[in-house]
Length: 255
Image 1 (cartoon, rainbow, N blue to C red):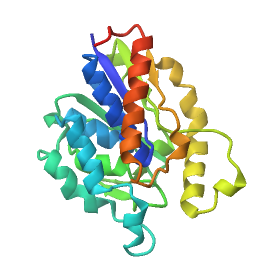
Image 2 (cartoon, rainbow, N blue to C red):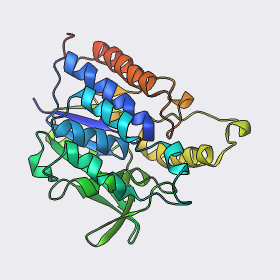
Image 3 (tube, rainbow, N blue to C red):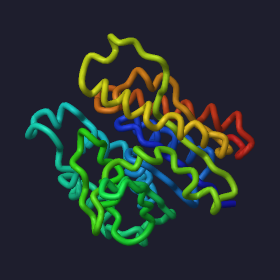
Image 4 (cartoon, rainbow, N blue to C red):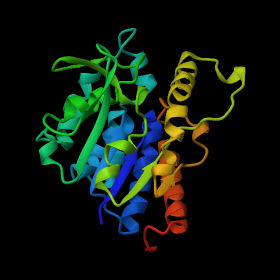
């Protein structure tokens, strides 16, 4: 049976994906296909490349790819996304989709023509970085004839990329969407996060019904997309939520 794994974007909240992957392994679930956007593209690529969940967690802790504090020390404005190329090359040395153990599809948005680009073959690392280039934080990534930013701006939950290839779909969505108070929008990064969530929410909710198992970790609204101080808590929430969802589903038997 082919099992597809869909990983949403969400900045640092994407660490919850890693906890969920730990739970999937404990239940004996090994996906044949992965579709990911932004943080989900990074987690998905590392997992598809053979990294253990502990190694992926270490990558997020050591690289600090979504940490806003790290960027505040650099030049004002955009951060050069490609500075993280060498970090990913350590984990993905062949830098090609063909080297992956699991079929992977990632999304990125081409600013030049406003279209969504699907990457699933050829060069690997630049498309991953393009998929994770959050507008307003990362500089767009030039690649071939495009100029790319976060795929989540057009498709933050890419179920559609793999549903035709899979018998079962497990989706993990790590973005919250509840009403907010004006006092919660004190800083620029709070406004950026809120605008991002509003932009993707309506399109995403319609796709939840396409999942055989939907994992939505609780309390995500308590955590910033751009702060690493609660990274272990995010991991544990992803793990706990995935175990609960899998126990309640009919997709597998428990460990």
